[in-house]
Length: 77
Ligand SMILES: [Zn+2]
Image 1: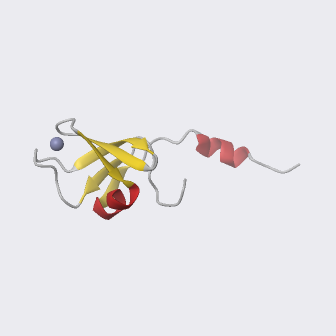
Image 2: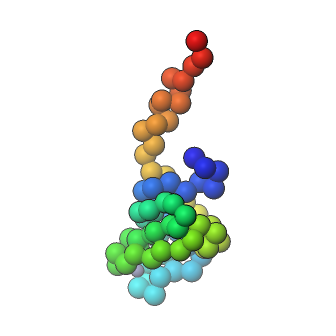
Image 3: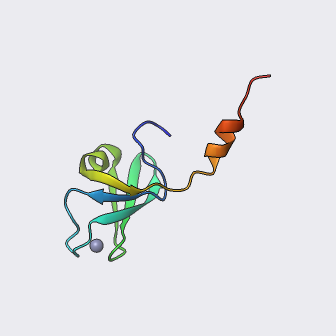
């Protein structure tokens, strides 16, 4: 995790809902820009990381992180 807690597949709630009435979004791209898809109408919105963090109110569910297990197994020999 990079520190701001954005992971691909996360479902987030924004402060301001979408005009369609939904207010939850799935993160479908994480990079210099963040792409989120409205879980209600399927519309995709792209914004920069800073804007996304300002709009995000809560993370509803975190994506499954298969690399969590690998971290536990990491060790120095
Ligand atoms: Zn929508």
